[in-house]
Image 1 (cartoon, rainbow, N blue to C red):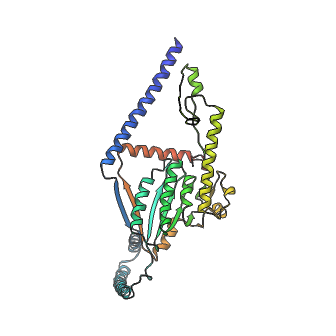
Image 2: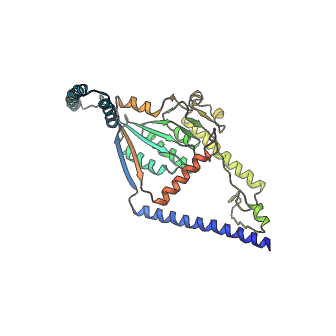
Image 3: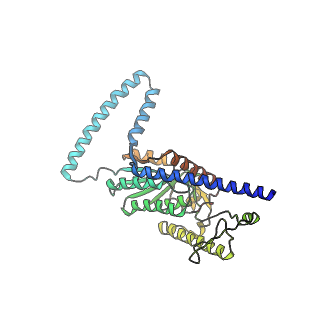
Length: 352
């Protein structure tokens, strides 16, 4: 009798979990269908030079006396008139010479915050499409990446989106302020130049996969699970069936194959790197990553942008996806899961 009660409770728990998953999946499918019917999102553009100048002006106004501010306002008006006059003369000179050599290229700044599924690729592809529609060869794209990695196919697609920039012969710079490990580094290595903060975490060129197996638990409860496949390796390891040594070996060989592809990808994009020395699944802080050739310079994105804004027009580009409440909750859970899995020092416990 006690066994039947325990068995009944076990079945009730399983049914509850399955029902919750079914409801959640139904809500997600409905949300995705609704999003397809509505506009996907909107593109936002911010002139960072103007924002920086306004911030500087506000600070000066707060610190100056009334008299000093009046003098500064007069000087600013004179400077504005002189700048407008110089711009007009420059436009006339360009019209006569039919050249624009004196005008530096623009800089487009994109942000990529990665989770396990690399869901940010949906916005990234739209941003890159918009930039490439107007970018010229003397322009530059700066991508600020923050990601501890995730699924292979998601980060493979994200890296391919960045490859579109370099394929158009437009300079691509990647800035890493906190972490670009595993799949995050797969994206970063596409860049012509990688800069990173002194204690940013980079590398983790490795592959890992894990899954629980409930076979013995189900055996104790006298529950059989049947799995039928066509194809020798349609399934290797399963959640509920009995895993075999042959299945484990095949699974490991698949992981090793992905690791070899990852190593080749990094080598192709950063040929100067000693790939065997860095493809151990380890990750390194900025200074150590520079020694190993994983990055090109120690510098934060803020420092780099301030330097650029002195001589070039800089624009922040972002594509905001329209999301339902359910999708926002799921995205938040994915980010929390990603942060939890990346809690270790080496950040190697990700798919790629």
